[in-house]
Length: 365
Image (cartoon, rainbow, N blue to C red; front, side, top):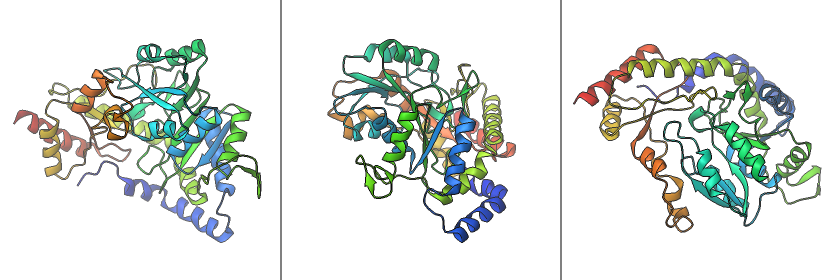
């Protein structure tokens, strides 16, 4: 069996460090916003090149609280992509704003800057690009668009920890950004977890209030807040993995490179790197007209595979009423043909060759 992500192999590498840290946390009985959360926030801020990093309970909460802290609210329009996990749009709806879905680039699957410009109205208050599958969006263009139109820029970095553009980390390019530490992420916890980053002192102060019931001083509450704090034990695990994140991401890039080399000439489209930033391959996603046949062949050999994402957000039942008449032809075409293969830092070359062999046989059948 070849899983999508080999978390057991990763745990074996960090087991001793993690178990010592967890034991110490239990011994100290410091479970909520303790020393490991504080240290992790400082370490991630330094790594990402931002002034503030605030740990929260999930990537969804990270996006939600970032929107609140940046003043996005009822009736505001937020331009984003429909080719992403629903959390991107959920966060927008949580604050009473309207997600405006626009089309993607056919090669990178990231939001199209041209489509952003065409969707701006007097109600537009923010843009939320997603660095999908670990490849940075065209941030030079998007940053300029937001400057020209006085829009907030909130990055969805839930799939892009460690990716960069011209040496600047994703998450350090907008007004605020949200990260997810779901276990399968490039930097993943052993449960849910998230992070909001910003260079704004004011935004950071608001985020710290929002995550802790609207309170800066215990039992004194200035705003209606949330219970959304990164768990101390998850911070122990994340600190161990953060030390190795560049090593992990480089290994993912090597896996992706071998996949692409071995699949050259097959009747499918391998991932495209636009050269605008460093792709960290949260997913290795290909396009094929024979997706179902290939996936069936892989599953028969107990090889993991998945479709991210089979139904674009503008076609989901929950958004159908809001998106009546919306047509996103590139998004729809990609969603009908895409599928993802196993990728993680511990995927062996022999396993990659086996996977590609199954794909080659399926294409020839």
